[in-house]
Amino acid sequence: MDGKLRFTKMHGLGNDYIYVNVMEERVDCPENLAVRISSRHTGIGSDGLVLIGRSEVADFSMRIFNADGSEAYMCGNASRCVGRYLYEKGYSASKEISLETLAGIRKLSLTTDCNDSNVISVTVDMGAPAISGNVILSDYFNEKLNFSYTEALALSMGNPHLVIFVDETPGMLPEQFGRFIEKLPLFPDGTNVEFATLTDTGKIRMRVWERGSGVTQACGTGACATAVAARYFASGEGPYEIIMDGGTLNVAFSDEGHVLMSGPAEFVFEGEMII
Image (cartoon, rainbow, N blue to C red; front, side):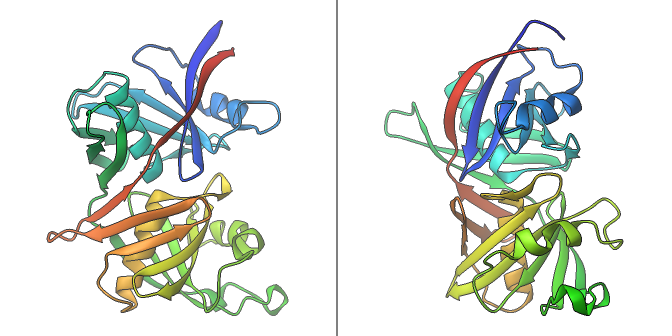
């Protein structure tokens, strides 16, 4: 890969990625490219790299690489952005798009404006959660870390999550403990970590530490995991408004037990990068 690489920067509630359309562009080593372009000082600046491509089993495909170069199975915010990209760039005329990911095929439903020209929001059927069970964090923390929240729920939304409900607004908990919890031996492949507080009926304030990227403005699968954990801990049946640093996602549940996530997707800018 040499010359220039065309890219699009998009974000879902501040969870920003660099999107490269590999139906038009060639990317030989996405792991290294993700590290380079994600740098806020020497690259474009992002939480990672997303490759949009063709698929033999769905309408299109999506691959996600975190800022450290590791490949992620799924990203809800990126899925919404890919849906808007495909529709507004003319690759799909349909408002229903199937998307191949490492976590399986996800179905996107697009809501457009009155002229059907711009995508207002995207709902992603995230599938059914896989709940592992309660984790007693006090088994892993020592007294010096002064971590008083001991019970959490481990589950997967296509990628691993640990949701910890705390008594007050999460504050700086992700910065303080996220890296340590991500690397616990209980999670050999690492985990995303959510710190959440039920602020009102159906409203949850959440901050997230993303595996491979650190603290981010929002996490779509993390919002879904938080809603699932709220139901698990008997905090209502939903739907939920998950309020994150970058904004709010709406999470509901289908009759089949699937998690339905809805929210915006925004273009930031486009350009060419010298490779």
